[in-house]
Image (tube, rainbow, N blue to C red):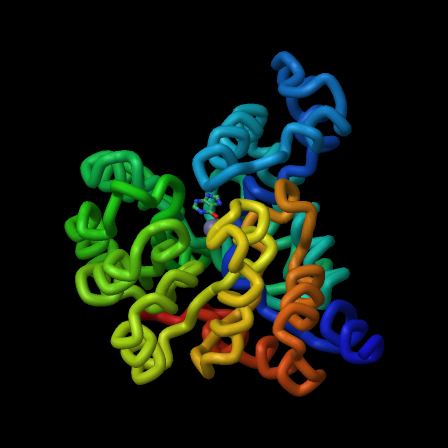
Length: 315
Ligand code: HPA
Ligand code: ZN
């Protein structure tokens, strides 16, 4: 109904957003502005040209444009403005808590978002899967000076196929010793076995995406028994053509499976949809009533690393 969609999408349902790449919130207008002020050539001739280019056939075609866009991000101020723009959008979507990918001047934005907007947040530092375990280790070492309250976890993102979680056992063990929580993208394009590896080898506390878990009944049972959260990003899956032709059926099955499913935006600027639009979409495709939508929002708090008092949950 219209009432249900309005509730789902807008102000009345507080939410935590658990899967958002901060660089994926770089809107084309901001990209062009940052390029100009950093003395870089414009990545696209216009905002419309950027939007026209955002036409993806799979994860890799998206990632190529995503990293191209990231190249305009140079200064502490860039990251501050990027993150604050996200937090303001999130506040308008009634997001009260967010967990996302870390870099440079983001800590200032997290502090100001709490003071000015009442949003708590923690950052998740993701290693790129196509790079080596050694390079992830170097990234972890370089990040040590920022390991205070703002980084709650490490994660894995970027090119999935051919880069199983087993590649990163060493660096995840080290992160655990440092007291960091662990999450991983798995089962987005990769097979259910990659989800098993994330669970059993990396000891993740959440699985990002995980939609291909549907293909393995034993895995579904394991996720259910352990109440393992999945950070599902419905419009991302549509735009990146995961399960082409069947994505609606798969998303419906996942949301109706009884697993601890949360709804998130992933790379909102590239997919043209912030978190409310994702709730609205899933409500429509899965035929959810208002209580089921509220349950998804409640799941987002159960699955978050937030503890009352504003601290991040540990281990
Ligand atoms: N999947 C993997 N890597 C990513 C994504 C994603 O959806 N977004 C940004 N990096
Ligand atoms: Zn993601």
